[in-house]
Image (cartoon, rainbow, N blue to C red):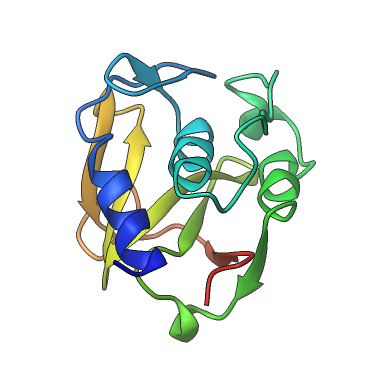
Length: 145
């Protein structure tokens, strides 16, 4: 199994995990930042002790500092949309900042911890009304080719 397949397999094990701010317990609670940590540390691409906490759940609504992107850039580099592949990360702009991350599963299908759904779910970026009009940035975790 190649590393991208490992990422997808690990990501899918998080499906249905309840949304819980600043948590990372598969099956019990996770948010859109910590799920990335959980997935990429499980496959050995980021250190398992990496913890971007504490952070306020509404930072993106009241501040302009790109805290979420700064954390992503610590273990990934930005790529162009046409370079994005399964296992890469897409970050959506919510509020004033890029503050919601997801793992690309295939084409426009992503896995993310969605507050509106209350759990980790799959979404089609081209159809999901909450994602379709958002500004996007794409990232590749360092060590992934």
